[in-house]
Amino acid sequence: MKIVEKIKFELNQLSNSKKGKDLYQFFQAFPGGYGEGDQFLGVTVPLQRAVSKKYYREITLKEIENLLTDPVHEHRLTALFMLILKFQQMKDQTECEKIVELYLKNIKHVNNWDLVDSSAHLILGPWLFERDRKILYEFADSKNLWVQRIAVLTTYHFIRNNQYEDTLRLAEILINHKHDLIHKAVGWMLREIGNRDYDTEYRFLVKHYKRMPRTMLRYSIEKFPEDVRQAFLKGDMRILSQVAI
Image (tube, rainbow, N blue to C red; front, side, top):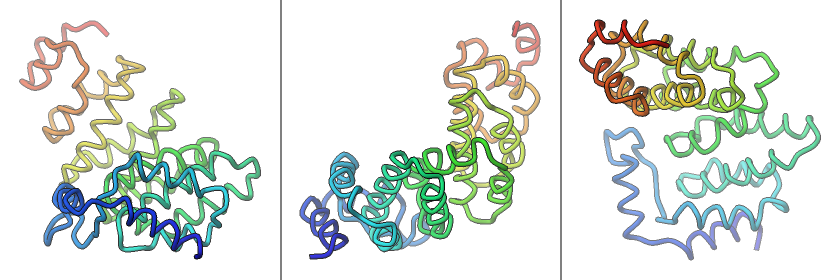
């Protein structure tokens, strides 16, 4: 049995039809949902990670690509887990580049928030850390929701390394986005900045909070002191102007 078929067989053995139905609803795979058309086996993430660790050393990039283009959600997520494991083990930059190229070539298959959030900052983040990042701004200008979320989540790696400029610039670009999945992603990354540099996030919010979608703002200020959080929610500049930063 070929390795791709082995992986599919193991995932199928681990499947749970009830969980699959729950995931179908949770990830809005129903008509009109953001994940419309996706298919679910009902395999938990820890089990997918276990399968990934079992096979990632022997599977080829071509075989991973086969899984990544599959209509079943768990096949794609497992493929991404294996791709990340390979990327993290690679010492050769040429081989790392091949992984990045495969990821970008198949970016249309990274098409739900868990797929994005599990991979962008772990593949594109390290790759772009010391390289030109203009591709992230091209992504932000895309009409594709998931590509735009990839742009934002990639910067999580930069934030973890105390670089905030790209996150803030992308937040400004996407501040008027219509979809709450972008509002949540931007708010989450702003909160991560604040966890490391409160002053930087605070100054950004004072400048932009009035035009931020409510969900983005709520995510951003989740860890702020309660009086400051309430001042942002109520738009009370009297209090905000008095807060020392």
